Amino acid sequence: MLGALLLIGAGKDAIVNKFVLSNKLIIFFGVISYPLYLWHWTLLSFLRVMVGVEPTALPKIIAIIIAIIFSWLTYVYIENPIRFGGSRIAKTVLLSFALAACGIFGYITYFNQGYPDHRESIDLINYVKEVDEGCKKLYPISNRYCRIGDDEKPASVVLLGDSHANRLFEPLSRLYKGVNENLLQIGEAGCLPLYDVQTTLVKSPTDLLWLGRPRTGLHS
Image (cartoon, rainbow, N blue to C red; front, side, top):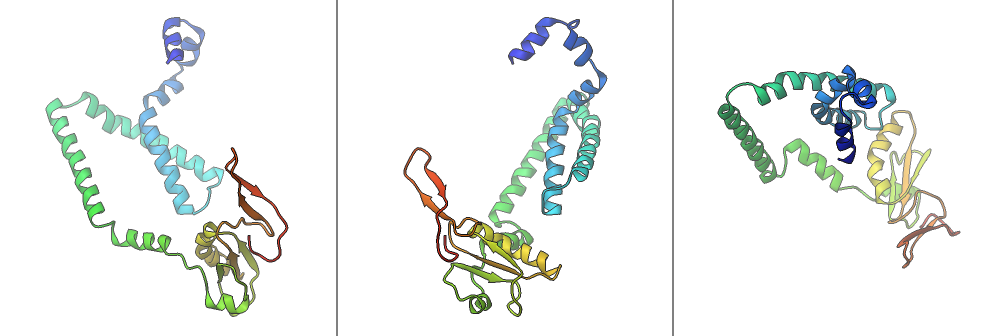
């Protein structure tokens, strides 16, 4: 706020105002700034969901370019007509109906506890298998988590960790099967993804310290 006050106080002939903030490209992005704020995050988030991992630079750049185009179209064909065109009463009524429709749609979604495909996804996320009997036969250890992609052949890749690692097992197992690898997941609650490392809660200003201590076996 202080910076904006100083820029306004400096007047239109100040160097920053005259040569930087008056630049047409800067003005263009300033004009579409709010639609761009709405579009860029939506597209980048959707891109990451579709890819499944952190996207590389090129898809991100393409998504940002698309966001800029959509932002300009939104500014020209939605924001400007709503702000400056048509009857104020008609716009108020239409926006009120749109807001009510969003509220009704949200309530129906909440009342139905989502929709079938979404509920199946939530159930899959909430229910994560911890032990495969085939894994226990191959690796008779007392760890809480023991899962293997194919119990007919030995593991070629090992995933160590706690419930966070366990939730990654299904997608990683499918990924490794696609390249003829067999994923094994073993671990305990609160287990770091490191061999022979113990986690210890310490009552101190730091609250939680990760301490490395030699241990026998795969427990942590």
